[in-house]
Structures are given as C-alpha cells and as structure tokens.
Length: 328
Image 1 (spheres, rainbow, N blue to C red):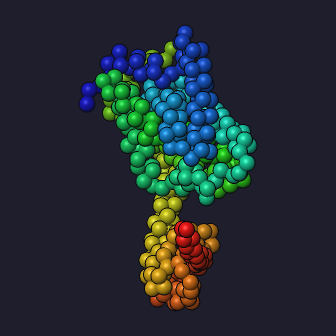
Image 2 (cartoon, helix red, strand yellow):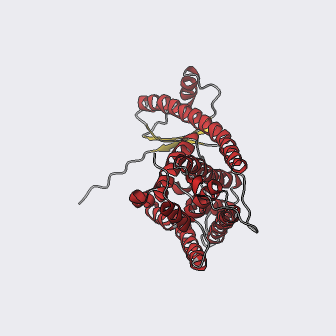
Image 3 (tube, rainbow, N blue to C red):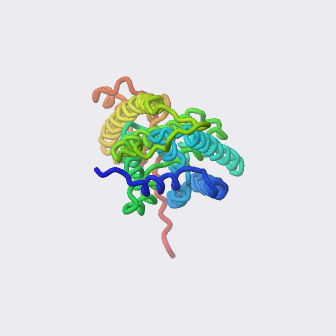
C-alpha cells in the first residue's frame, strides 16, 4: 500500500486537528454541531424514532477528535493529542448532560423496558466491538484517501457515538444506573475500536514519515506508550462484552425453549402465547384464549421435563371474551 504524500498528510492534519488560524471557527463549529446532535439524539431516543437518531449520528462531530487522537499518536504530536482527548472527554460529558436535562422534560422514565432505542444500547456484545473495529478502519481509510471520503456519512451512521451518550444521560435521570453503565460501555467500545483500527490503518499508510520535526519549545511523545494504552482499552472493554454476549446467548436460548414448551401447552387448550419476556428473577409469559383456563401445573411439569426446572416462570392469563353484537 502506498505511503501518504505530504499533501495527503497536510490534508489529514487540516481535517482532524484544531490548530492554526482556523482553529476558532473549527471549535465553534464542533460545539455547535455537538450540542445540536445531542439534542436531536436525545429527542430521537425519547420519541423512540430511529430516523431521528440516525440524523443525530450524521450531524455529530465526535468522530473528528477521535481520529485526531489517532493521527496525533502516529505523528507523536503531544499538543494535538491533548487537545483531541480534551475535546472527546468534554464533548461526551456535554452530551450526557444534555440527555440528563432533557430527561426532566418528560413525565415518565426513559428506560429499556419502555423504549426500543434505549434497549438496543444498554447491552453491548462482543460483536459490537468487532463491528466497531471494521467501521473505524473504514473511517480511517476514508480519512487517508480523499477518493473515498464520501463514505464518511455511512461511517457516522454505522458507528454509534452520540446516541449512547444521550441514553446514558436519560437513564441516569431515570435512576437506571445499570442501563447507563451499559450505554457508556457501548460508547467506550466504539471509541476504543476507532482508536485501535485507526492506528493500524495509519501505520499501514506509514503516516509517521510525516511527523513534524521537533524544535526547541515543542514537545513530542513516544508512540509506544499511547499505543499500549489503546491496546489495554480494547482488552478492558472486551472482557465485559464477552461476558454480556455469553449472558445474552444463554438468556435467548432459555427463552426460546420456554416459548417452545409454552406454545405446545397453550395450543393443547386452544390458547396462544402473546409474549415471552425476560425479567430480573423470572420469565414472564403472557397467554390468551377462551375459557376454561389451561392448567398451569401442566406447564410447570412440561418445563421441568424440558430441562427448565431451574427457571422461574410467571404466567399471565388473559381470557378472551368474545361478545357478539348483532345488527338490527
């Protein structure tokens, strides 16, 4: 793969660093877009609107300072590394604050039990890290190659940065700290993945050849220390993601087995299963049908026979009462 040209290197610096005579305009644009993206994302989560949340992903500028960290590490540029880290940290905290404040504008708690946007972001899995690594690589290649830079909007949609932070704020306001930590883990996963894959891509393009010469009064960094820190970050997030993946797979298998057994039990009484939902200490089954009600003791026996003796099941029986109102 060809190395970057000096023109490419300068274009990359101009794209991710907040320096030079245009720094003021870049800062104002960053904060304006971030605040608007935070508001849009939070409103989209509250409204459970996928389209609105996607709009926030496209507007959000957080990808820029994250890639700025990548480039600063490769170039050994201490000043821009510190600036980029500060922007990511303060930007993330700002979106969480926006989510927390807007959470006070609704009369109900925005949590996973009642909102699909929240539910999809509080239980990250190992596959999310793999997807984020690939997406981060695409974003870094798009940064290095101007001929494919038009893929960046797709990258913004594929890797979720602002929406998980909005979920953190909303769930903190609702008192759901475990859900907030799950959404924060998803954000951390995406950031760590972008940094890791970005460093690899920039190394492949041999971007370090364009590191500025160190002069008196300037400070550089040794690349191996921040690179080692990024590797540690990826390893740290991978552990809870692997545990979460295992737990989700186990829960899904159990619920599928409960659904299968319950379907057979309900069908024998001409009833049908409405839903099988996971609860902290049990599985909640909702079934409906005509009188008489089916014998729940038979369901318990069938579950035990299917190897689900250790599973506590709550059954909500919803009788169907059909009333015919004949016309005159």
